[in-house]
Image (tube, rainbow, N blue to C red; front, side):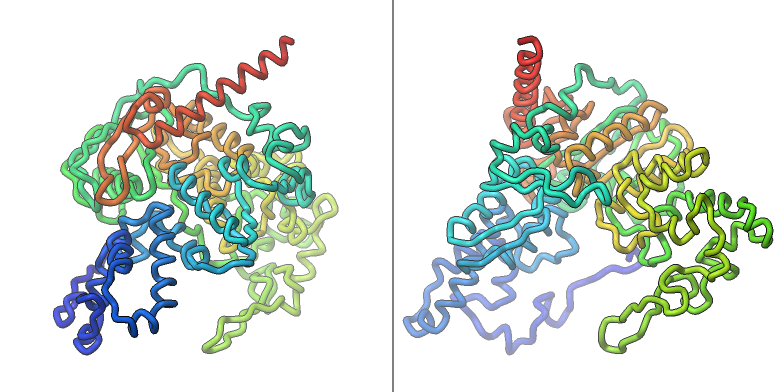
Length: 557
């Protein structure tokens, strides 16, 4: 909370332990001193610690386990973190790699590991390290199943299983199974189409110019930022890149956004230290689209969030049967009395308090989970009642409400951001972080906010397939075409090569980061010798151009 602060305990000086516990030492250090060390230093200490023969015999297995985990953390590039670092202060990429250590950092063999998108939040450099760690797991005799969209994993896997062809009810089939090489030549593989350049966005022939002005942030020095002064172009797609932990979120979410809110008299958390922000008069509003949940209540769902449910209720209220019974749009709401089930109050389920155990949710016995009274469910539109409509996917509902422009206009926004597979009534607390972020973006697109809005997005490609990223870029184009501006914190190379301007932070993470390594167009960044991002971007741009030339050669042959 922004109203609270913390200070070290005066009795233990932040060590958290009693003097008796701190009296026990290993190699001359107590546990608090060891915990305050960086992972790389702790690993070196544990390797060189002087133990007696008895201590080494008793603690050999424990020492091996500790060293295995410390070495894994080093191998995935977080050796700069201290062991006592609070998890809430880690970046998304750092958190992902630390979480994986508990599973992957052991010395077990003949195990089956199942990883769900382990590359989320990782820079291409860190993804490469993670892939090498996963490969070492395989080489030790383990089996690894990875659910992943990331190009490195797809190109270098031993075996690929692709499901589809679409999302939601349009998926659920195995469309390809085989080696990555076979996937690239398979006509039914959507992933293969994007990896070979048969589909997707090639490198743009030209970039937008920052003709709408600039915002300048002076003296940013929060966390690991080293007194940065950064110029952000307006009216273009500006990407902030850098290795995980370089200071991207600190710069954008914790400094720039609250600083702009302060200048516009908007409520926000207090900004981390900075000197000044200039150029805010060139924007009317700013919106931070992060990955925080949009609501913990199951009453919130995609159609209520983008205000499409109001129009849907009006459609039902306008039917002959509803007008005959004098039902208003309010009768078709599950949030107010009138038409909702009185037993579950429109939730569709009943919550049972289990005291010291997790609460149990049971389907309402009166409405059978349909949320409404029977007489309300008797009202139909084109053969479907309101509960059945809420069970439809966004794409199916879009076709179902043909001719209803108000409904279709808002549902189209969900389709534009690649959420056409969601059910209209899907509880918001079941959405992933990436889905929640795209739903927020759809909400802003649907509400037609005023012009000259600055959108700040935190890794919007999280969990997205190549085809979904193309849809997301189309949304960005729509925003930019009407005068808005975009600043996006991102690792995805497909999005970066489509950017107009890139600000690359680094060169490393934590104390080794916090400076601007390079800035400019993707081509300028790719040519910069000191940019870790530029190295991978250069490879992507070169491969993309080679693929386009090969496709052109095949077409003319």
